Image 1 (cartoon, rainbow, N blue to C red):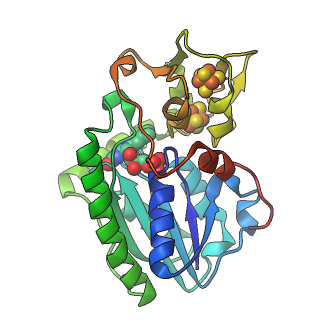
Image 2: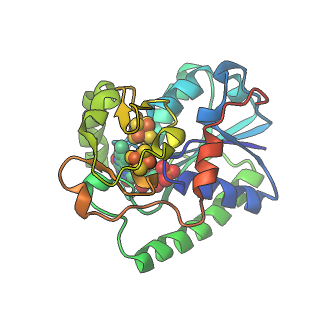
Image 3: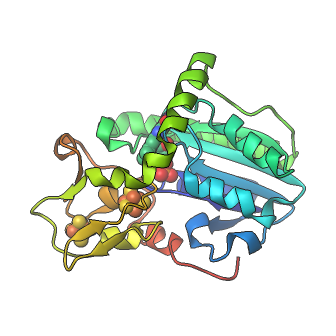
Length: 264
Ligand SMILES: Cc1cc2nc3c(=O)[nH]c(=O)nc-3n(C[C@H](O)[C@H](O)[C@H](O)COP(=O)(O)O)c2cc1C
Ligand code: SF4
Ligand code: SF4
């Protein structure tokens, strides 16, 4: 079994790891780490685990699923990791896959703490722990479905959300790469370069000792959330908001997930 994952702050990696444990083992492959998506090798059972961005599928995941031969296989499922509003994400993914002749056999949503800091922090630690507990229970159920290779309708949000938010997704999608215009660094930046190393889009250069964003952003928020100095801000409100990354995922895991490998 292979699980292809994409993550900014570790929630989707944590879900992938937990799922692999429940399945008794699976190969985890980071999408930004794949050198040639078209040639990526999968297995008989392939999973896609990724966060919901602006009520839809992140652009790097769309690019991957549109070309990867790993999905031309027996059983493909997906998990959309979100902060409470999966909306139409899995329907969108199913459509994208159908257009290239791949059937998404099942699509699940899992709620985790929010990393979308422009709207606030991740919430109290107790609430986060509760979400991890609920996620763990759901992952066990998902693992049973996958083991039995069940075909299930994809999970989705209420109709009004799917109509309104899909419209917003479509309106904003092409503007996402330039949304890094809102990032800035405060005086705490010490030029360590972590922001550049965690970026899945190679969108940050140090110029010469402070980050500069190049408008090819995925909006994963890894740079802001993993900055050890908490020096990266987005707009005016984020200095007041708490940072987040999944507590069991470490900086080295994210950096490693960005390293290009030919073997997959
Ligand atoms: C740009 C952006 C947009 C987001 N949009 C949504 C959304 O539409 N619905 C939702 O429930 N969560 C949304 N989120 C929250 C993430 O999906 C959620 O926190 C996810 O668990 C992050 O996963 P990761 O840690 O693997 O990156 C958004 C996050 C980002 C960074
Ligand atoms: S990670 Fe933070 S402290 Fe390090 S270079 Fe980037 S902004 Fe500066
Ligand atoms: S610049 Fe920051 S938010 Fe944009 S893709 Fe890179 S790490 Fe993610």
